[in-house]
Image 1: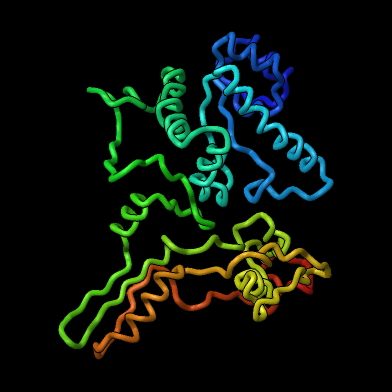
Image 2: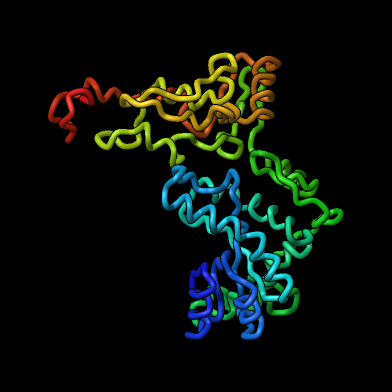
Length: 325
């Protein structure tokens, strides 16, 4: 497999004996014909200039190349379909935590060019066929993508048509009815009662929480090299509040280090740990419980964790800037 975008790079790779092209969004008609003739695999990703695009600065060289590449995505898929090129699906989410959480949404984007059934086949049986070409490095010592004796397969029985709905909400939750049933069957939050005195209320602070704002690339602008991973409380309050900050009037920019930096969460909902449904359930349980002792069992710390770098003793850090001590 070779990562290549331009016709020249793709054709040189094929001439060298490569059997699979990764990306290839800038391929032209002649290159697509060659791929079909040589029985080359095409591992394509639905890279679009949308909310999942890496936020390169406007006008930068990387941003210009990104726009050129995403503009070619539609044509690439059309060529793959026209010439019946063997196509695999990938999300390219290895090194991007935010994008990794949206892999299902990336898959759903494929319905722009294929039917839901074709999308699921590509992500399972077709990808499995491509993996068999890796020889000794194949991580699956058995057949994939087929239902037969000796094959490696996970079977999920559903009530209805599993390809009828590949829609997801803004948080990446699959809205297919069977998926919702499966999620609720594994619901972690619940209550346990011991007599009339004790009720244990258990919450799940992992499954329903929002994306952590400080993990996003844009958040690096609010951090100091002297204290990586830390940012002012005022900044964090604004980012956490999102569109709800200041009674629905969040600032377009945030002042930090003498600069006005774009508030990248201005139009996004406020962050949450419990999620809307679980939070409502939790508050209702606290209100309705008649137990003498109501014990909250949670999975993360409930108290704020704060650091005060400006008051650390001089010499405790490598920071040589008095204003950051």
